[in-house]
Image 1 (cartoon, helix red, strand yellow):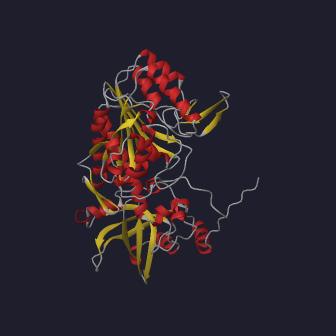
Image 2: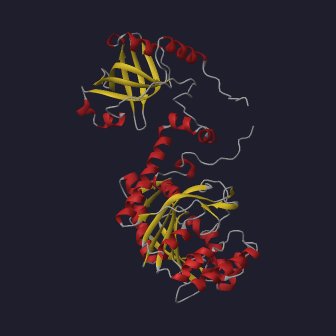
Image 3: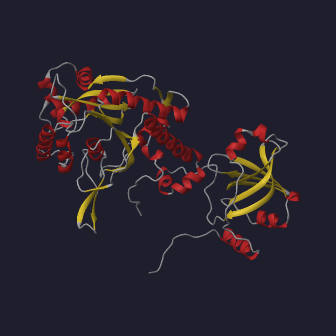
Length: 480
């Protein structure tokens, strides 16, 4: 089979590549030992002044002034000017300098200086070519402005737009902060299977695949919930999983079909424990990125030192008025014809009229039982369950229950899910026989919570689209 690669190297760069090879220089060099990152030098410049350093990075700019040359070098976290005086270089370094292009990756030895114009710089002593670039970068002054192209050519986006690269670095801090909070609270990280033969633990359409060796169909995990609960049955008390979940649904600014999800379960706990833990997780993540708890998102200032708690029925009544259950059902039917109960109606009106207005961190509690098949009923009103969802900027960040641990009640809930499916409601819970069997052995009272970590990263990094915090988001097929 012939390989067809639609890539045309720049002729001048290709010429330089061949000249470098003729000089006996490997254009794709070997390991380079750095003494410092560029950001280290910039942050501690006064202490570093006059010291000899070894740094490496990509050439992103170049200005020639006869025997003097100025090169802009960038690594993961920073950028610095290289001051090149050809009189300071030997023959080998001069040959490399002559054949360098913007986009090349180089290693440099030099002294930390200030130029006559007070620019923080490295006076270059030695140059080593580490990787020859054969394609031209976009103009550094404009980068990649086409948003769709940025996501399709993500490697190029990261080269040209340091802010894009920074979003990913900060998102990593969010995940690290979440793990640190959980570890401090004595939760243990236990992985669950990504391939599951029942698409359970969430209301979602799954991705389907086939396991050849086992001769059966499997689904990509839509949630970790039921496996983690089986661990609680088995005697584990505080467990969590951070891994990708997969839901075969739409793609927009808040949804990616594969997403990084935290699920955490605490034996002998309840919803109140999950509220406290969720607040701590979110606060710590926001602080890890911003160094403070009050942060900006678009035009809003968000205060993560304050979390509101509002029951769903109160939130809906505040919006539509205390009009009585029958009128609430009628109002909701105008939006969704599948609504048949007061609980369905509350959820429909909440999603339509309330959710987008929840700007500050807000826990919505007291969810209808119809849409919460894995949560424990409230003693004083069994039409509702002990559940919350956390919203910030109208975005659902977390979902938690006092977990249902009554196996007989759980079976009835799954039966109700089947009835909902028959009514045309697509997103319902699938019956998981092994999970239900485990409940018959006894699961302790439990608080559980799930959180989309990329959505949390969106909020922490002031990103209006989830794609900004995902290195390689899923995209629609490119039109020819």
